[in-house]
Image (cartoon, rainbow, N blue to C red; front, side):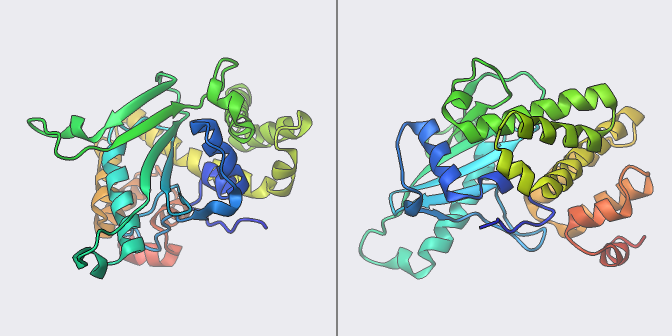
Length: 290
């Protein structure tokens, strides 16, 4: 069955919102085989900017809950973000009343993974620890995130073990290569899709979802480019930091002001800003007083 998506979806989330692919990816990561029938997808999908939402999370029976995030920009604060996500997921599963019971409440053990494919050099594998962020140091609370660099390489062992992840990595690499050649992102995406179809890299997926892939990749990459161009022009000082902080605090009003400033400076179109805010253009215009 074709996955339901919105413009907020990333290609990674759209591709792996599938129990069979998640089972393959999990086995590649851990060496532990699971049946797709054991998997229940639990991804947090917020409606408003103040909602907490993650890329992919799923339960394997009642034993394990797995959280996965994709990052095209390196983020050293992923352990803190994962803490928010897992707390929300546990709260949703257990509810408020059960924590007051006299019997021990059993919960699935968590596992955390980040898949990085940005252009900044990062190791093939590293761990982020929540305790590294504690002022003064403490071991009272720990959360460990396994970070995997999924940029394409013939020597990337994880990509060798997971066909779907390798296809995704090659698609991203080819999009970057073609974009550098033709300086036309939409054309580059179409060329990368054609490459994957020609070389039988998830051929059916790209044939069935060509328009969706084009929309998702073009939208997400254009937002990154807008910030980069703004930095070069000296207009975006503090914008990117403000967006990250606004999302972290869940302050829709603050986010609206930041996006409105990007629109006024010509960095984002009204349409793109409204999409990022998750509202209609008319609603965003009123919200941002444009």
